[in-house]
Length: 377
Image 1: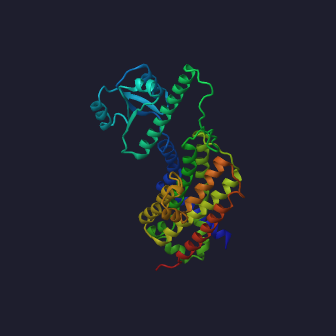
Image 2: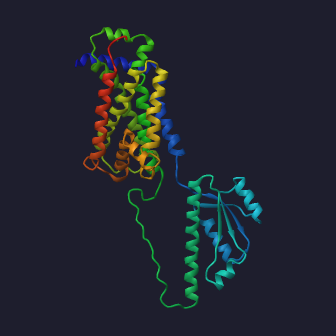
Image 3: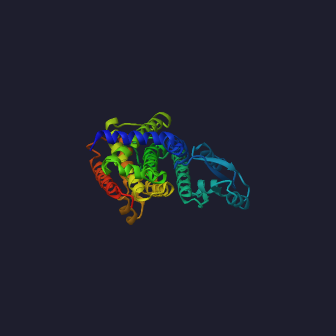
């Protein structure tokens, strides 16, 4: 491989990117836009769920229970309707996602029987929100019931409180259970996959559309030299974009970074080899820039967003889909990023996903070099 020819091709590609507004926008603006839009827009945390409360009794006990909902960070009381019909209308209109009905005999049953019930009506058009809202409601009611039981035991001077089974939890790696702490590391992978594959998918197809491929073919530059020279600029751009994304993740979004920079750099280089190899293979196969960019979007954004574990846990997917995810290169890099950011894992602990990513990179680069033929046909 001739270093001078590779350098000349790389310099030519740098100039083409610099003079192409579309490539510059993809390289410089897209990472920033996606980090801020998805960093703020994608969240699985449910807080301040709008609740409508229908207190049929209006007693001290019922108001004490409803005060629990007002004090919770997961709920806010949007309305207090005075009938079932008004409550149903509020849920139908979308004014609240949850309705709480306290019955007429709430205090009486609580005093006489030691137990009673509260009705929760959930809007299940969004099943995830409904499930979590009902779970949060159960937690609030259970806490209220525990306080009532303690007060009753104290008033009756019961010796030796009833034994209860309690769970003391300790959360590791994401102590505050913040969605952004596991979403944003995966977002770095998605941005790099999209930007890298999009830029690399324009390399060869641009030459065909501009009519300069015939000149390249007539030169003594080999296929391997052309591939290396074409991809070197995008390695540099990819590393710059990755650095910006990581700095935003840590400095702006305050995602903890507990790993080592060397581990992140080594695995990022491997991932760039994969996505740039995919883009170069697409560009060698499709001679239209528009067609190549569309295929690059299809092969990068959808698999990385849906099947890499970026937002949806892989172990909760159907078994067949779980098997398919092993063919998604983004799965391994997302796993690596989350482990580096949150767990502080090193190269030895990440040996398996790194080996899979390395095998993927070698396979893709070999395929890309075979797809490019130094001929006009």
